[in-house]
Length: 398
Ligand code: ARG
Image (cartoon, rainbow, N blue to C red; front, top):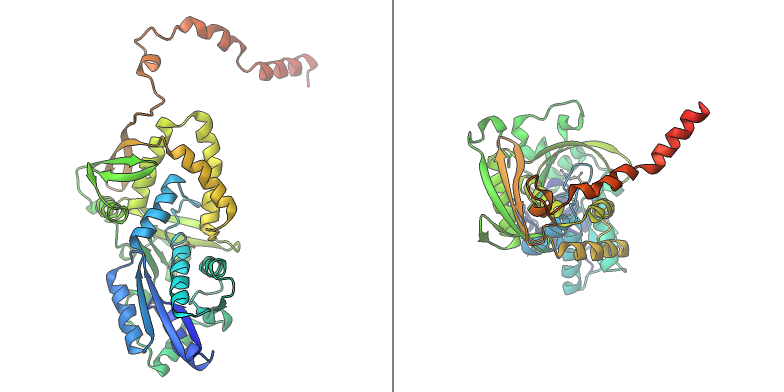
């Protein structure tokens, strides 16, 4: 029995892979794996029913909590951001690869297939993930290998009885999980085309958002959110709740130019309401508790972490090294942040922590603990080298 594990979303690209694997790649059994990372339940159900129609052995793996805890929360600790994008699609790929490998090991398969095109980042992330966790893996990427076009896929699907949806999916290519929603395709590819309102599903238009600001308080422990407005919940629940609260206020629309791994510049639209607020709150708390030098250095570490996460280098030793540094800093990232969400904007309006490196005694205008006179010598000698340099220039006339 030749078995292949197909990383399956239920969309057109992955659905045409089913007959292709059987007829052209010589597998007698196609095993479809759909990993639930918080995409709409209808998408999961659709994948399941298509799998049933096309008679594959199907697995739906619920990875929501693991994704939230070990991927999204790690991204929070690292202030995960790539060119203004919280990497919602990017960080879901390694866990999808990992779950596909888990299923493959269980059923004794070493062949895989996925529906990624040859232009994007996902082919790198998914294949690297699978090869890292199962070195002997053989991976097929039919869409890429056969240079398929969408019209060819539709025609082939109709010929082979692959069910296809007549839906928005046809105009916009959408990828969703707990951490965000990405919308691509159609005219959105033109950098100068303003995104039409219809592409947004998670975020209200700021004009229609409530006329009163919403205040939320987020409590952190170890650099990870643990409660919203005093209510503790699991990682996935917290993210979902924040997505809802922020989305209602029109927070989290992102429109960026993005440099893909291969160097392709593309225009991308995202809705990441929860991520936007949680990342902002986390950074505000770090600014309160970490030293100036830690903050400066961590920016470099966070930037490297983000690049690696974007590229799918999830199991790279450098990423572990960076995370060791990050983990040490996060021990003090504990406390609460208050934010005001109002018609598309998200502002930090308060922060508190036991670890605050802030002393009212020292900073206040009204106390005498800090003897101002002691600053005199420091001020006088500040910037000594710059002054010497400018004096030399003045003297030499050059
Ligand atoms: N450019 C983003 C990334 O590489 C997301 C792309 C996925 N979007 C999609 N509609 N399939 O992380």
